[in-house]
Amino acid sequence: IEFIQSYYYNKVEYARFSSSLGKYVGFTQYGLKNADYWNSDTSYLAQLNAQKETYCLNNIGIDYQAA
Image (cartoon, rainbow, N blue to C red; front, side, top):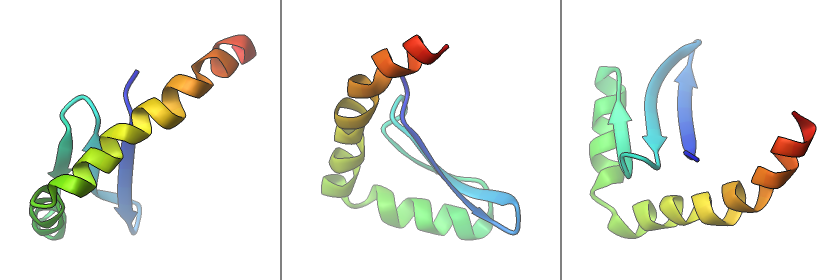
């Protein structure tokens, strides 16, 4: 299970958080600046990694039943 949070502007993805990497990755110049800023805050990264357990793991059974 992987938690992914993506950010888009004008249909172009500029940054993404991936729980498998545990950090943000930037795809544009603007996204790289934001990713560096967000990755410097370890408490924010810990919060996003915890969302995998609080949201994804609790709802995985529902998603498998629907499929």
